[in-house]
Length: 473
Image 1: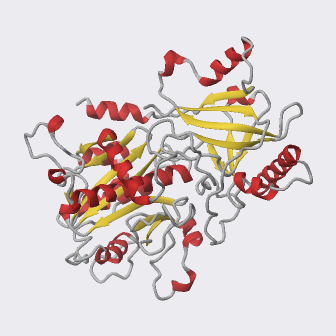
Image 2 (image 1 turned 135 degrees about the vertical axis):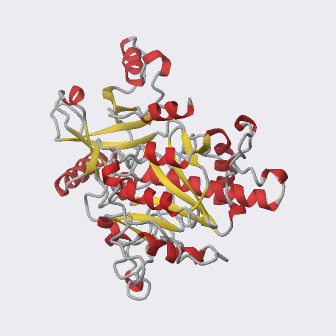
Image 3 (image 1 turned 120 degrees about the horizontal axis):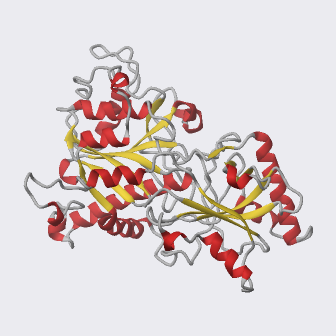
């Protein structure tokens, strides 16, 4: 899948009717202007989505996601190629990396997953006072935190997210700090998938690895890479547990891509003394070969050092969106309130609930329109809480928002419906949804929403080119 979005905006003529899910957790929201990272999740799960009628407990969802993984997982990709292709920095910059020898020697023999959390975090975070290996940090500008006990309940307790370790940008640490534990356990933090830069999932033993590298000379097309160790007994507890655990980390990637405006995200899977790198996007995910990070610490050290020296675009962020300013956030709230009032009337019940469906205080995002669209006078769209979130990692991954036109323009509605979706580069031989809707309107088809404008998000370096080049070798 190429990285192409289509945003179709329709005039919204009626309020959205749906059930409400559990409210977000009670921690104080971040200050206004964090929306480009900390996008709120939808308050509803629309029943017409592909899996809307499935059971809602997390175990069933994880099993479904692991079954999807069979079709969209690629690997194993050579570790050196993964670092080179997906975390590209210059050799000159790489020479500045702190020494790697013995970087993870302080990690003990692992009896439980928790044995690795603090030693790994301390190996990556700045350690100027380490007795034998002092360094200023292997991932400058970022910090690892132990999130294993403090889940993200933004969507409610059922289906909450709890990676073992999360890498946060230093600027986001104040939003996830556990104040009551700061003195005794400074490396603990809340899980907040809206700010997660990388997540790390830990398993105590290598046999718990979700993936199984083929031996040299094996026919890869016939090799069971995903859950290969456990497939010998699909009915057994080992397979079911591994499938559930794989689905769980897939759900983390889904949540990060739903809560942040991203093209892709990265993660690390650790199984005992071995590790793998993973890259997630709307076409699926790529997994590196397994490597022993204690015998070969350079690859893991290099991952973090390279990540720290990438641009935001190279880390997967969509640079067409930015955090809204305080003034823009106020403008969004005012336009939303006016639109709700026009829909429901001044005396109608439900205005507060309707507002909550579309607005999370402190999380407003500004979407800049490209030049060929903004000539109409629309410079930006302001959005907050989407109406829908994708339930799977792959596919079109549609999100819909009530969006405010900014600055307000005479002759256009204050609020429009924004449809944010991925599409294949060659969809229908070049036909896009906006053109189809305009044609239907021209032909007199009734009940067709009016298109204000539509466009593709431009990207400098299409990631699909890299994937095709590597896997064609």
